Amino acid sequence: MELVSGEAWEVFGERLKVKMGMAWLQLQRIITKGGSNLISTLPHSTPYSSSRFFSKSSPYVVKVGIPEFLNGIGKGVESHVPKLESEIGDFQKLLVTRTLKLKKLGIPCKHRKLILKYTHKYRLGLWRPRVEPIKA
Image (cartoon, rainbow, N blue to C red; front, side):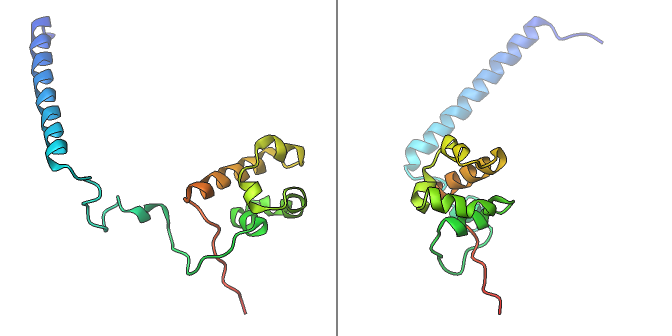
């Protein structure tokens, strides 16, 4: 079996550069001539629609406090509700609380990580605690 010579690789490389350059020019032409956002022109049923981050929409908006937030996270974090309500007090303060403050309150590392992860998601609007229906 014979290996490809250096000349063949050079020819292949040049052809590839030409093809890539043409594709790049076509893409630039589409963007500049179109003048509109290509994603916004897609129909709403595509996976690029804005509802892709939410699995279910909540039936109504619930006022979120520290207990609702920590219960929404679950995984044992809800055990720190009294401590956080007495020391931090306000949900808005919890959203900007840092690791060191949580550590000084005696919250274990895994729970701190979960709290900080979900506060970040909440601030970005990517996560909200689920609304739990009242059981009769």
